[in-house]
Image (cartoon, rainbow, N blue to C red):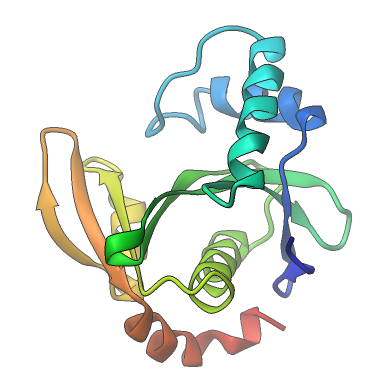
Length: 178
């Protein structure tokens, strides 16, 4: 469905069942999972979950990506697009994890790729997402992009990020997409 999705140092490819062990190990890594929902089961459960997830992908309901380094093709993380709200032409993204093999700008580049894909290829007009209140670095990251906090609950701040804001902000960052 998607052509090559690549920035300067990283790319995205759709998750496959063969990625189950990599994803499982990311999600059980206490250095990386502090702000994520917990995972249960074993690698085989993760593989089965991915197989079911592929049905959502086939129906264009959600997309789960592996983030990889372009120089080595090594897998370094994941990101997911989900919770597509047609009435608001909005999508959510999350499950964003990068391991210790990431490139210097992999967080920035993978976020840019998410927005490029969602806004320019899938045609969404905004993104809605939540960030754990104690995840200060990621809150700052999203605010720098121009995301606006619209609400909060006990655990999370809720944000909206409009396509028009992304198109303006991304003009400063084109060097990371080439």
